[in-house]
Image (cartoon, rainbow, N blue to C red; front, side, top):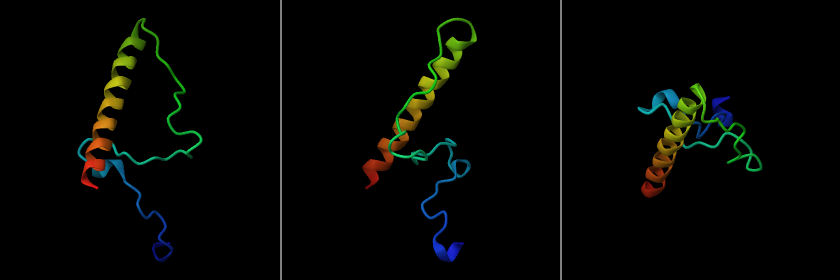
Length: 69
C-alpha cells in the first residue's frame, strides 16, 4: 500500500498537540454542514460551549497552516 501512496497526506490527530487537524475528511458536497445543534437547556448548554471551543481551535489550526504556505 505504501508504494501506492495509500494514506499520503493523512494527518493522524493523535500525532498533534491539540489532537486536531485541519484535514477535510468529508466529500466537498458535505463539508461545512452542521448535523447537530445543541439547545441551551441542561447539559446541552455545555455541549454547545464545547462545540464552539472546538470549532475555534480548528479554525486557528487551519489559519496557522494557511499562513505557513
